[in-house]
Image (cartoon, rainbow, N blue to C red; front, side):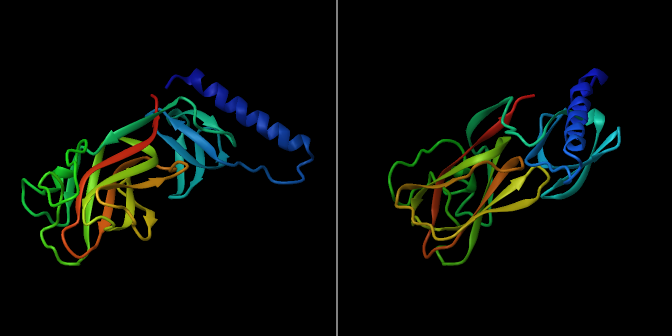
Length: 229
């Protein structure tokens, strides 16, 4: 990153500090919904704690992190960070599962791509676990482009209502609880989760399922905010 690109960042910090001093320093300077756009295109949400001229100290939900001045392109302090962005909807490109009925039909890979199962029933074009018992299973879907998630849609095509928990996996391989509850999806039908926006980039989704019989999932669509580089 060229040095002159850091200028606006330093100016912003100076102005904010001046505003704090001008009100008599009666209260500490607070930052809300701070966003830090990195040279990689990633957007980090957190609270700016300090800047010593070379390093930013940032408090995030993942803990304390430090970013060098050269790594930060833009700082957005206490305002809507959704600029330089667009929405992206995508189907899963890879999949793996706790078990699968076979390596071809009913395999985890059948849950990738667009829907191709058009009626409720036992169809080999959807993923199904190895056993029809009531034990817990999981299906992990990976997407080509990490996004800040706003919506998840899962197409259930047999024994619907099988999802009891959903986890998001970020680009650091950390898992985040996204939803847990009773799935009331009809067959065939879409299980949906809508969010304001995750504060971390999501690269994959883990669906936890449990139901008597063969639960079957045909497609998974992830929608979110893509940060332009």
